[in-house]
Amino acid sequence: LLRALPCRSNRELTELRPRGLSYVLWVYGLLGHNPGTAFLQRVMEKLSRTVPAFDYCGAQGLSGILWSCARFNYDPGEEQVTALLSSAQQHLLQFTPAQLTRLLWACAKLQRRPREEFLQAWLEQARKHLPDFEAEELLLCHRSFNQLNFTEGEALMKPTRDPSVDGPPVPTQRPGVVIAAEGEWRAHCT
Image (cartoon, rainbow, N blue to C red; front, side, top):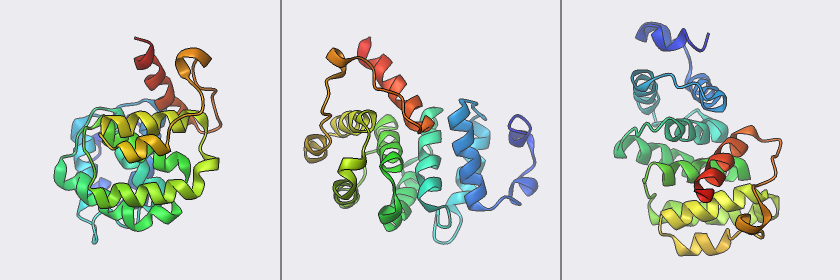
């Protein structure tokens, strides 16, 4: 199914609702199966045309969409990233630490610094859940804020362990975070 879906016509693709499309992108990212630039572009165009843009995807979908694009080095462009982040900001209260981490990591990977208003709202939500962040999530957020040149976030998300001394992050039950953390750990070691 995952190999066949990118080959489907636009008409068949429109039968999937925004939440379904966002879930499909997340699964591609989770499995490391790149559906190709043309498919990612088609999905992003469809999702950005919903009214309001990227609505109806929920916290899981919004974080998964941008995370999957970043995982496959697909930059959907300033307009679509801004629209997605705008929708995400409206739903930040529903975001879990893993979803907040994926969203921030994707922004850093794509080198798309969100507006200050978004970053402050992100921090406010993260503060509420700070004890719930896993060690690798803190590490990824800290490094992402460093890349985005946002020192307030970098200071808040400072990991309590030093990966250069303590070794790679301990795997969690959240595979999406582990995949990103492993990549970040490899980059740190080289």
